[in-house]
Structures are given as structure tokens and as C-alpha cells.
Image (cartoon, rainbow over the protein chains, first blue to last red):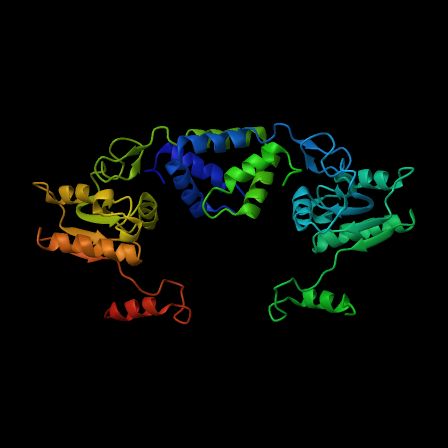
Length: 202
Length: 202
């Protein structure tokens, strides 16, 4: 809006570039920042400017990490026989937060998506196969935890197919079904079909 | 999360301080910033650091402004006989965007809220009365455009009461009713009551 100070308009513009932040939200946030203390804003601004400082990709699992080898890969308490394959570090964050999984991870940094021109060579797929086929690899099970969309499925099937002739590994996929707290009434057909197909004895 | 780089955790922390940004959104945004080009991040970071540079409160209407007197107050094309009273500059932005209103504004920077200990002396109320009672003031109508909540109502009534003995002004309030595109079915009781009370001949 042309009557606002340039600095406010500039921050609105920058904030509205962020994913999921529309014009209105950007305005609200910019006004919040404007009211903030200088100390707070300095910390915020510096955090943006320094985001890439000291950021590594773990040389083993390719997660974003604090050092060359991430905390999880260098933790001797983790179960090295199970490998959970993920699309990105955020998914790893989500699983790690549950505290349920004690194995190791491999972050692909993407998924196979022919429509977007992304093939297995564009993600950390070769690195994963290398890791699995390394002499003395302790990995006994690979859990595929891609997001349950078309590209995620494609990626899972690709891995499954390549592994079945290659190694005597157990390859599993995380369960798909009705989410906890969800309702059957509002679930889509595919979710219900997966839930029925994946039914288990109780 | 303790396995993430410090710089990423720091930005997640800073982003999650923003209103309406939870932990998950902050993570998503921080990862987005991490993938951004350095150029983009420099612009974003600098915009945060410089947000308060060259920001004025207009000396007439108290809107956030680029100079001592805002563009609207210094525009001779605006109708100086109508004054729209608002809680904050964002509301002014919303009304200005419609292009419907050609009068002037007064921004109170808050509303009377006894529960929060905010009285008329804590907002730009005296400044508004001064503006209205100034010799030669061209203002003929005051439109009260506070948000339709308890504090907004209180503020409107306070202004109405003070003005009715003071000046022969027309004091109006923006209409309250069912919003465009809204549905009666999902409207709350108070909205429907206001809509009925405010019915107009067609």
C-alpha cells in the first residue's frame, strides 16, 4: 500500500514470499515486527542472515546436521540394523519427535517425480543403495516412509524393485490408514481403501 | 530438535515467536529460508533489521507513515468533512484497499479495554477530540469503524457519548451484519441479531 513506510512495505513483500504466508498474514506479521523491541528484531534478522552458517548435510544419512556426521548417525545407542528412508529432514524431525524409532535414517532430499523431471539420479538414491550394499553393512530392514502421494508411491516402488533382486533385505512401508483422531466419515476413498487393505488382527 | 544445526533451531525459535506461527509452521518456514538463495535471505534479513527506519506516525491521523504527515492527510483530493476512526493502521489498510472511502482517518492505536487496564488516555483519543474541536475543523461526520467486539463497542459508545454534548456532528457506525459470501446458517446469534436490527429498505 503506497501510504505505508517503505521499510514496512519491504518487509511485507519479503514475508509474503514465504510459503503459506499470504498478503494479509504478511501485513499482520510485519506490523508485529514493527512493534517488537529492537533487541528481538536484531535476533530475528540475524537469525535469517546466518541461517546457512554451520549447516552440514550429514555424510552418512544426508540429514541437515550440526557437523559432518549428524548426532543420530554418531549415536552408538541407535539400532544400525533398521534404516528409515525419508523425503526430507522435516519428516525425520516428525518421526524423531515421537521417540518411537531407534534405528537410523536416510534422507533422499526429494522423491521421484517424472512430471517435474526429477529422477532417481536427482536425489540421494545412489547414496542409499551404496550404503545398503557396502560390505559389512549392518542393515537388515529398510522402512520406506515416503509421503503417501503419487510421487511417494513411485519412489517406494522404485526402491522396492531395485532392492528385491539385490539384497536379502526386509523392505517395509509405513502403514497407511485412518489417522488417529480422524473420522471415517470425513476420510477420502483412498484412505479408507488403504485402511481396509491394511487391516490387522487385534 | 537437538540434532538440527544451531542456526536452523535459532531461526525456528525466532519464527515461532511471530503471532499465528506455531512450531510446525516455523520449521517449514526455516527450512524454506535455508533453501533460499543468499541474495533472498540477505534482503529478508535486512528488511527485518531495518523495519523501524524511516517510520513515522502521521502527526494528524497517527497512521504509520513515510513522512511526518501521511500521504492521505496531505492529499487535497480527500474529503476532509468525513473522519473514519479506526483501531489501527491495518484496519486503515483494509478500508483503503476497497477504494470506497475518500475521507480522512484517525487511528486510535488501540481500544478501551478495562480488563486490560487500557483507558481512553492510553490511546489517541484526546488527539481525536482535539482534532474535532479545533476552530475551523471541516469535519461534519465521524464514522466509527472499531472492530465489532466488546472493546470496540465500548470505545464506540465512549466516543458517541462524549461527542453528543460537545459538537453538532453526525456520528455513525459501520454496519454490522452477515458478511458478503457468508451464510445465515453458520452465522452466530449476535451477527444475525445485528443483521435484523440493521435491516434496510431495498
